[in-house]
Length: 141
Image 1 (cartoon, one colour):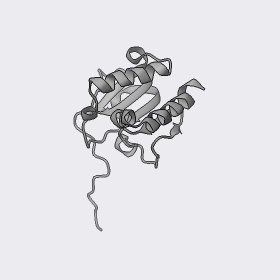
Image 2 (tube, helix red, strand yellow; image 1 turned 45 degrees about the vertical axis):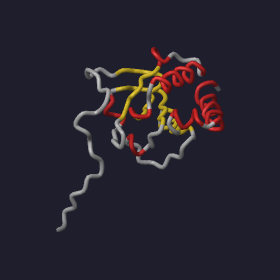
Image 3 (spheres, helix red, strand yellow; image 1 turned 135 degrees about the horizontal axis):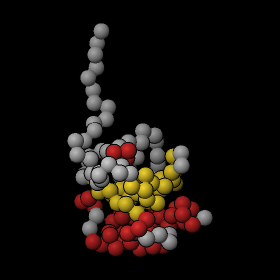
């Protein structure tokens, strides 16, 4: 008998943003790469969230991931209605389904959007417009 010893998914020893064991409930969970996010991106994100009639401080939780690391969203200890991932693919968050960028996907009772980083979106007017159309479909209709 041959035993295969391969890592299918490595669970990190110190997952990001895990709270005190209590499940936090938010309307939107945003996942972003730490190195892709500065003050300019925070201001842009604040405008994005405001445009869909939500409050960044009350309705949103932001999880910052290190570059190249993978996490399962179940590790965050957060219950969320909607997920927006800026610059992080679905597989890196523990979703083992094919998800194309810039499409709203339904996972059970959750809507998810995987798109480019905020920097990439802000740098390209067509991507900014595309994001706005997707956010309208996701939150305003």
